[in-house]
Image (cartoon, rainbow, N blue to C red; front, side, top):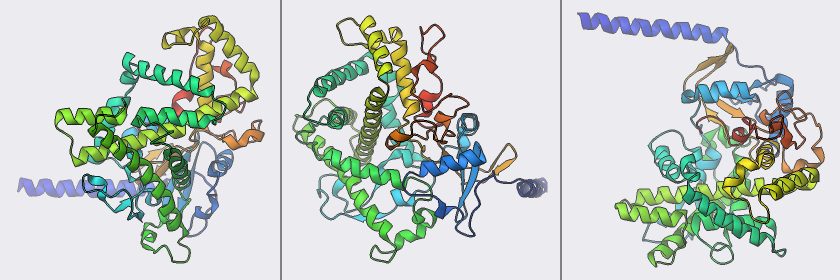
Length: 471
């Protein structure tokens, strides 16, 4: 009898809670936003190229937090560090999932000639494109497995260790020598460092094909990761439409992009496996982890796939972010020679007739501030990867339903905006908020220095450039 009464009471309380929540939801509203069209919402208003400009225009009009809809899907765009900190950091347990990204991870690609082999898992003929990228994976065991392997090598405590710093120093010295070669573009030297570190492959020999695949794959990623850019992300069932069907150009583009993505990660991993087996592999991420798996007896199909994916993710992330930041540095120095002079004077004073070392960092506050300003001024990813809300929430009187996509705009700067580096009205993104950073489009390392210039007082700009919250 008591059990029955308890069950009835539990059900009754559940119904009351649901009614209260439903009524509260009806009284609440979404944040303000641009007017949408029936059914389509704002889907037709997002340009596929340079979408961040449109997001920033809306931010200027609707404020730090505004609402969009795509065929019933909810999107909230955040342009303020306070809101980001409250939602994506303090409430990260509810705001750290990844939503469904059909264009990137679910469209099948038929590649019958992709390095078939009976010796390992790469013999699959039907594959999906960016499902290897654990940054796009929803929470779950698969994501945790990838995160654990990647974190074992790239956690901050390990990166700052003496062994890691020695590796970095070796590659830095190699890069400086390569930069003296005037016959190759700068980006080829940067690519060589990333390829050597992840795979131990010489880009002039085994790895020469990788940069072409990486650039084409990233071009597709940058276009397909923008919410609302492709209708198949709004209507996932469109993925079943045949590629020859009228209007199915998105499938043909996906096939091309994902062929490059798969070739980019499968081929170098296969080569390193063969080199390790022959005892000829160079010291690198893949070879070291393969060795550890062999010693622990954990070299199985599942761990090999995880390693291949982690290596591919590290390679493409390093290639894109390191290369973009490095090229932005050259741009900044060309546009602001006075900054270059100050930095060089500080280096000459602290490191007379020698190359700087990690131990010199406390003596280089201006150079430190220059690096922080670079990440703020020329943020590599102006649109951070979207987060997804797990459970419905309320913030400042606004209702945020479960499944809502939260999109943070960290910067309004693009490398192709060289002619717009002065005030162009696009000052609403987090790292270009004129309330926080006066004259945000000016490159001013001084904004992070103490009053006497003896130390770098770095702000959140250095971390906001890498995304928000747990992910």
